[in-house]
Length: 375
Image (cartoon, rainbow, N blue to C red):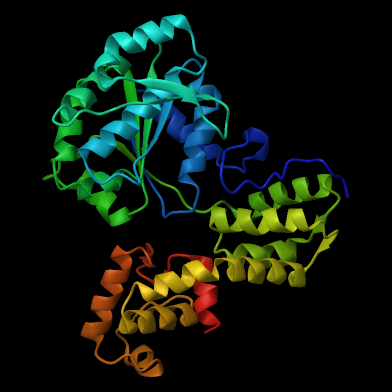
């Protein structure tokens, strides 16, 4: 076994094209849309790989000589938090590399925000924090868009978990953004989200500000054959071997979801096992579940006993097409369907359950589902 290699199966950051599996067609479609001045709504369940696709695009020839900005909105809950995250993403990207000209440019545009520059303790790259003044958030957002519009380079802005803005209570955020975005000529946008029903309403309902304003792209799991080729290549380079049958078992465990596949491959790569068999895969899975047990126990404490009963039943089935069927209700002694339906809707909202395109219900977190099956 060779040593000293970077683990090629990243579960966090984008490592480069060499460590990115497939998505060739999706990258082309996304890049061509932006290049031809079409904003894109990118939809997929969490952990399928939309964020990785965005980062891959931003490092591809489609983004050559383009100013790319990634903004994660997941943790925001109001206009002030949106403004701070957006501004810091723009400025932190702009100051890398840092120059006197960039400093003057930023202070000219954003001096009122009192930008503070420093170094990220993890990456070592320049970073910028700002102080968003109360009652001036809308003005600040307008200034950010004006700054991007005047950029010497075209700009691509990716808002990840964009559906979050629909939950803001203090402002009609969709209308506010639409007002500014429709005036821009130098900036193209990716609106990425994991809640399909919310994203679909935002961009296909005639009553919503973003109605029919983007090209909609849905991304699915990576093809198993392509993923096996990718995994096999890196395993062989590390002195390891995984057969197509064993990889199929691993891929099925993860339902093909990129993050779960990557986590398992990452652990198997780390193990150094020369011939990866079913036992090695199951050992890696059980270790991961054991490590996450405190988090899973917390999930269970945050829901009612009835909701937990329904959640466990769906986990044991793996996938449920008709939760209202007598067979399902009686098998797990769940009682009236009206109560079960209420529990399901609540847990979909909490992102503990997920309804796929076929209308089937399953536990959102695949590893959590395996943990529930064991109880």
